[in-house]
Image (tube, rainbow, N blue to C red):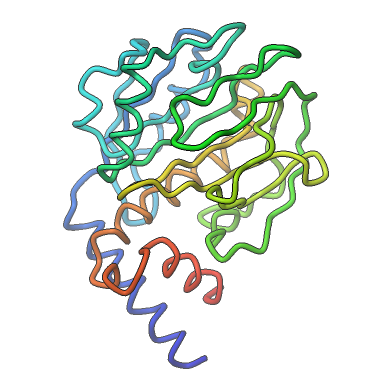
Length: 251
């Protein structure tokens, strides 16, 4: 236990050093085609913990200049809202971005009976499903959960609606919804980066207000993933796995 505590402290120190060394984290938010509610709240988060954030938004689903950012935040309905909007070039661009070390955070997408949201932007199969709204979720026992629901905010509720279901084993479930049927929040390693796939709904101002705490926590979680990838612990194995296991045992 003492060794684990020492390792946790060392890793936390290395992550803070990496955060200072890497400069601001650049976030591109794909938003504005379906709702205008997310970006004003997101862009308020200039500093979280030891991390600085720089923000940009686009409504262009071809994502020009994506390679210049660290995180891509895919906003409410930007993939699917009564239709699927990504073409093959955008799908490839997103997968390459993650494989090269970027992080994608996806918010809720619209699925209807007979028209599930498509998954071509992911390197695995995932099924979109129409659901009713819920603010109840269950945190899993996966070590990669770390302090996602505890830092910087204690998160006990969040707003979900249409969901992703039947996740493949490559997706690490961090939280489930609808009595374990669906993905609440999942982590998908891909190449040198990660997808953080969520079923959060940010359609209205009240939805975003309800989700504000988990939004901030997701940003810190992603920033720590980025920082952990640049620490000396990476050669010991997949950085996020060690990072998650240490954080889960250092609460």
